[in-house]
Length: 246
Image (tube, rainbow, N blue to C red; front, side, top):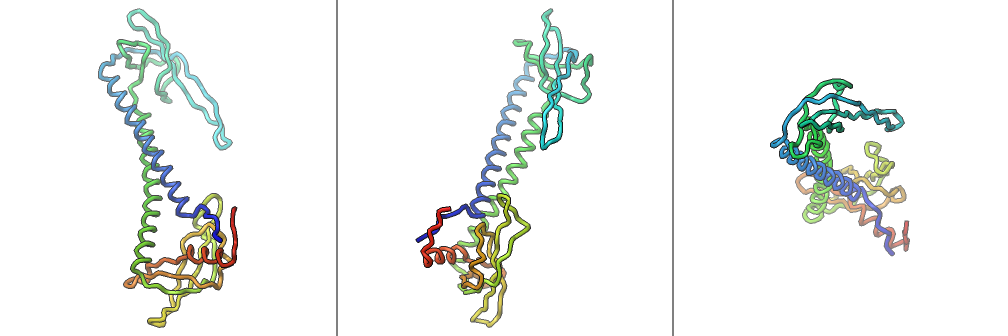
């Protein structure tokens, strides 16, 4: 009998990292496209003076707090034709009646812009932050997997006893703190006692207190180790013929 695989901490970290990384890349690509399109527009754009005709207010609520988003409208005349268009950028210095310079497309005078590149900067900024956050999560996961693989291949295989199970209150995943096993290892080769902690585990592993668990330790650096809780948990479910379909 085997337990149903639940979404482990590393899987959750991988999912979070991938989402942030991909979303960040998308935002940066959108920012790049807008930047290229804006540059093309500015290459042929001409300028004219316009008058702020209206400041539109859009009231919305975020986290229970009332917020206001502003949009500016400007009127201008090109070749005797009157236009009144919403601008692509609002500044707190704008007010009804204010005179500003705007850029317009000679082939399509209704396409008017302020020349601001704030949208691209915001997209690049947010996208860059998301990419960094995602990369950090993914680097942590890859680093742990590489460490685990190397230790299982080349590490010293020791047997430890789970003395306690604690909540890692420094981490919260899906609204819950993960568990960690506190393990005591008595090295039969040198007679010394080592204390180790397992990785974060989403399952409640309290029933395993007192159980024996395999610990892989770097032969040259005892502080590098891996507590193999997966092996212990799989064996427990098989030995007790437990089918976990949760």
